[in-house]
Amino acid sequence: MSTLSVDNITDKSAALTVDATYVVNGTFKSWADYQQTGTPTIDASFNVSSITDNAAGDATVNLTNSMDSADYPALGMTGNSWFVGYNGTARTVSACGFKNVSDAGTPVDNANNAFAILGDLLV
Amino acid sequence: MNKLIDRVAWAKEALEKVQPDYAIVWEDPETPEEPVHVTVPSPEWMAMARYGGLLPPVEVYHEIEDTLTADGKVTKGHLLHDTDPVGPMTQEEAIEYILMKDVPRRVWQQSHNRQMFYIVPRSAVPTNRTFRNAWRLNNG
Image (cartoon, rainbow over all chains, first blue to last red; front, side, top):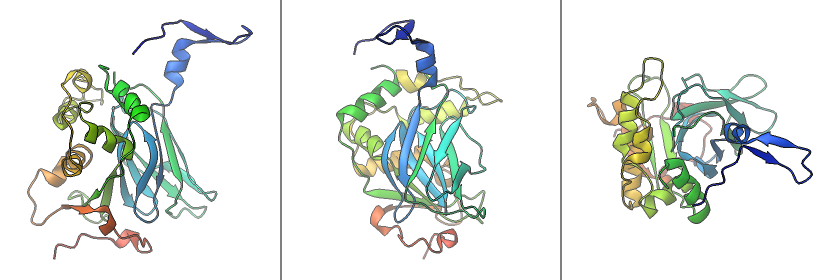
């Protein structure tokens, strides 16, 4: 494997330049697209070892390569104008829980869920 | 590819995804009022497990967890990358690895007055979730 070692990345017009550390630090470190209807299934993922279906609308994503601390941002998305957030359990270096709720605040299952984690990997 | 994340990235591009044959259904003795949990490996992870030579021994994750600082910082992260990877696993060996990695140790390592987990074919997990929050383990 070869390594590209640069300080900055610039577009062809040289009008836009970004520090390479911005790219590294700003890249998602883990993501998944999963179903929580029928049998729980991960359709596609990166750096995810498994998903735990905890209850209706409630899931925990487990990471293959852990984060370097439990202080990382995580983003979630689900369907039908529902909301997704932390499921109330503590984030750890290797797992993060999500919960989908309806407008009325009721946990709901969804066939299309996605999450992504930013922050620093354990390297 | 010394870093685990490099192996993860390589596998994502090079290996065909493998949907798991099995799931783990389990209850947490610390929260017995909660419904049963169902843990399913990711197809990308299962491909890595079946291929071999990519994943660290599961005990590495335990040692990292056991040596966190009081404020949750990792002190032995190098083990994730430097420990020799394990060889190819069968689907059965892989689901046992996931049990030990992603299910709390109190579930499978401690003795209880009843079985707290089962490894089952994924097809045995109910697909009708109308009463999902009432699911419990059937210990016969």
